[in-house]
Length: 132
Image (cartoon, rainbow, N blue to C red; front, side, top):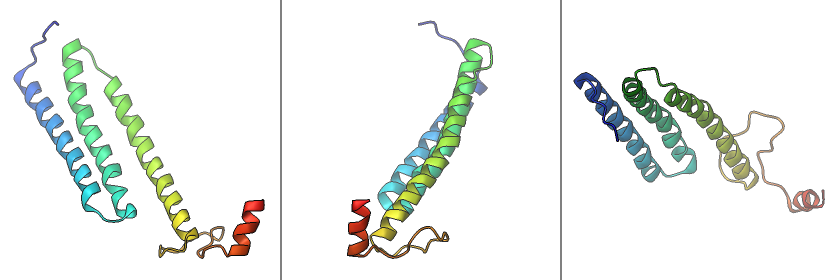
């Protein structure tokens, strides 16, 4: 492989950004272990994934841009895609969990929508729902 010598400032910046990104990802993993309920655990990886991804992205942009003598856009595209999809996915997962727990009669915050019931189905309503 052809080695490219980078300036010292670039090596330091890449190392600091990559290590910080890895530490942020580690904190998110520890949050998954430490937090008790699903509603608490869902925030740790979603928030941390975005920050850790951006730190790694900056390290990748510096490395690939200096190695190839041009701006490397592919890490930026990956980071933008993750920054857009992670919050949307988290919202959908939280809504699905809230809907499931409301239907099961668990103690969760009330719905602000008039379309969602806050109490579990009765046996008759459940039987009718299965028929439909």
